[in-house]
Length: 539
Image (cartoon, rainbow, N blue to C red; front, side):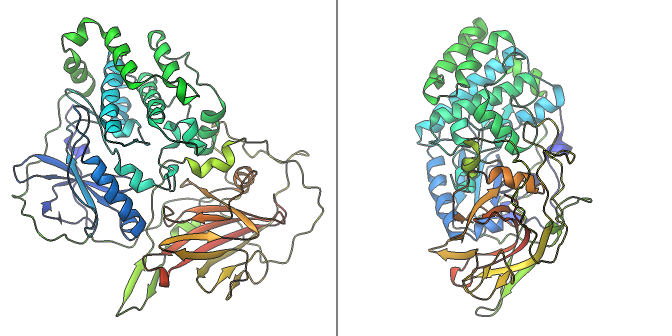
């Protein structure tokens, strides 16, 4: 299976030609932390260069975490890991280089050939378990093990993005900062913002292997909220898995972390089932059948010469595609410009979401049904009604989360939305649920504060929940996730441009805030702009 034209994409106009002396040969992909490129060492060995996206690079707290996690990742040595060989947490931008693994991700392999046979699943679980042993021995919990972080080489699986994923997502988006993790492959304690341990990775290993055996996520598809609710509250349905694998999956996916299998038990269990094939080293034959021939890696463009780090070229982000009902505010990307010792331009960039963990701690404790009709009788207050782009967005069918339905006598009423765009927040201003919505003092309901580079939204009257999704958030979704919210301060370290926040005032009003620009590199000049939609008496 030679898919070089798909694996290796040509560099685009906004890609740097070189990073810290590594000449880039092709683009390999992109993720929540940044872009990944193919390059080569001075001896010609291919490496994967991960370049941190500018918004994270501007965050001093991220750089500290990145530096710490890079040092931890350097200690990992395992036959089934992609070794970290070089990195610079202080570069412009920060970057890291790992050995390139010539093989598809488990996600791509399953998409091409369908579910893996039982022997391949056993080899997969044994190899990934060994990789996690090496990672845990270095004092790291992966926290984001998933099919796209498992590459299938000709001689077995390789686990990638250990350690560094914590730095990128930490507010652990993992609780990705603000949790590390991807909703479909999180453990219950991770989704509920509990203690994350080595057993958390075992649960993710069980889900990753179940994906390989089923060809789809074990807990189904749909919205992140629906999937996380099922992970926390429902036992996994193992009936569709091959019967001989069910005992091991039941151990890996136990709700209680203390009852899960250890990594050593997983390796032994798999080797016993593989029998003579394990002793005869039959694994490579299994992987060749799954992955096919290795892709032809492009040759080095020239012998790399170490030079001073080169800046990453940044372009103004373009509006995301979308039709009626999508979040139109995502196309309203603007730059915040401040004059400091010349001209300092700070542009908001669109970030990707990756998966949610303690972001949902206020919700996963229980998801009550949609509230009944509002009996309060309060009339809508004065405001300029503006249709919310996402207020009527239907939930994904079959995702297990409460969904809006046609109006009925038992359905909650939908208040008329009041919309305000590009509301500014800085050290001298605030936002209010009442007119005037944008205030030039600190007496409003929502304030923005930066303390020692820790910037956050704060309120004495309202509670916040960050929504970790790139889809438009509806009033019903805000109602659901705010039911048990109690946080009056929400850090913005992992909130890229486009992030949505549900906010509930103590009087029952609900607001949806969408981050449109963010400038936090210099705390003394820090500022935000946000689009704001308010629904009166909506809680």
